[in-house]
Image (cartoon, rainbow, N blue to C red):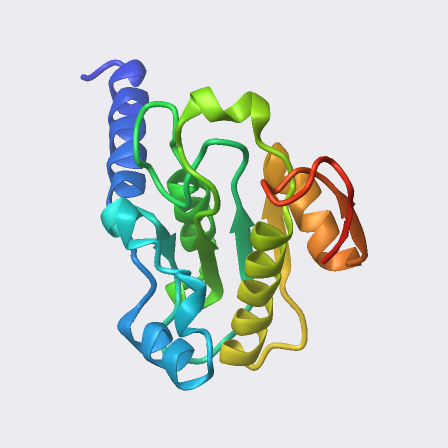
Length: 181
């Protein structure tokens, strides 16, 4: 008879391997929809991170409220490196609960260079781009609302996306002056 610890280890290996199978980018269907609907310049795919820069989208029935994941400072939508691990474990959790790729979305913002983290602030470009991503997911899915799951700096970005208004930050165009996004 095998010890119970064997089954725990086997479960953990299975769990990690299924999360490792999560990869993007955004589905071809969603990418085509984005182009047809004026979002082609927003770079939601983030091809600079290969298949890990974005996730989500398929034509299909939406059963659950769509979820948008917004990562934190120096991270990415999906696993890019040991310091940019993204959302694959969380996406897998939702899929295990019956969600589909048509209901789960992520795009990357900023870069994954941890040396840039201390100087990164909110800026209008990132806020407006992420706000447009939320609007695009709402329109694409036809959902009345979405849920945001955010982490670290993604929390404050998500809050600002929802609330709108002015933001204080340095986007390289001004010196810490109030900006209206």
